[in-house]
Length: 93
Image 1 (cartoon, rainbow, N blue to C red):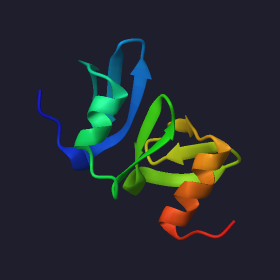
Image 2: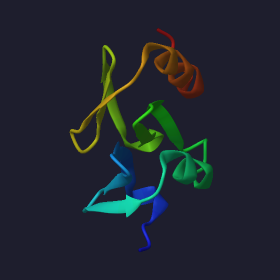
Image 3: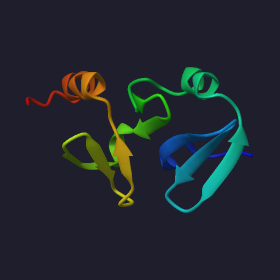
Image 4: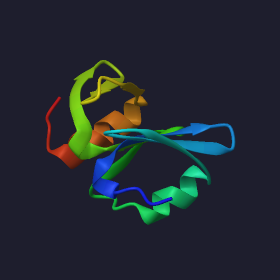
């Protein structure tokens, strides 16, 4: 299975699998989040929670500890990761 990295909106852990959500479809893959995290560009992807990695370019907005993605998905972000993401995006609180 080949997925264009720029099409990935987010990746979610579901038991032993990863659900990779792209602009057009979803894929299930038997892999760890640590394994895929090593393959992704840290300037483009960000781990918001132990179960989620998002494509920074696919962020639509923030509301509390939720990130709304451009596809309308809502992704949780833990408070300390939110501070780290804001620094990365050069956003002041």
